[in-house]
Length: 195
Image (cartoon, rainbow, N blue to C red; front, side):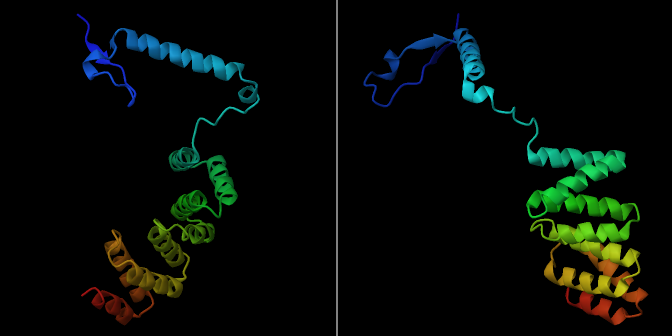
C-alpha cells in the first residue's frame, strides 16, 4: 500500500482539498530526478552558461578557514604566504582583518613579534574580534620589550571591554606588565575599576 501525498495547489483553485490530485511516494523521487536532469541539460546547452567560469567550490569564508587551519596545522611558509596574500588582497574587508588576526597570532607564537604586531594592528579593525587583536598585540609588545605601550593598551582594553571573556587574562597581563615597569599602582587602579 502506498502512502499518498497531496500535490501543492494554487490559491485560485476552487476545488476542495479532498478532490486534489494525489501522487504516491514512489513517483516523487523519479520526478525529482527528472527535474534535476532537465536542469543539468539546460545548463549544459545554454550558450550563456557554457562560457561562464565554473564557480569556486569554496566560499571566501570557507577558503579563509581552510588557509588558517592549514597554517595552524602545518605551519609551513607556503601556508603563511597564501594567507598573507589573502589578507593583503582583502585588507579593507572583514575577511582580510580575520586573516590578519590569524597571521598575527601565528607569528606571535613563533616569536616573530614585529610581524605579529603589524598583522594584529590590521586585525584591530574587526568589530567582533577586536579585543583579541588588541590583547595579542599587547602580548607581542610585552614580548618585544615594549612594556610601556603594552601597559597602556592593556588598560584601555580593560576599560573598553570590561565584560570580556578574556578578562582574567587581560588582568593578569596588566598586573604582570605593571610590575615589570615597577608601576604596581597602575595595575591596582585597573583592578579597583572592577569593583
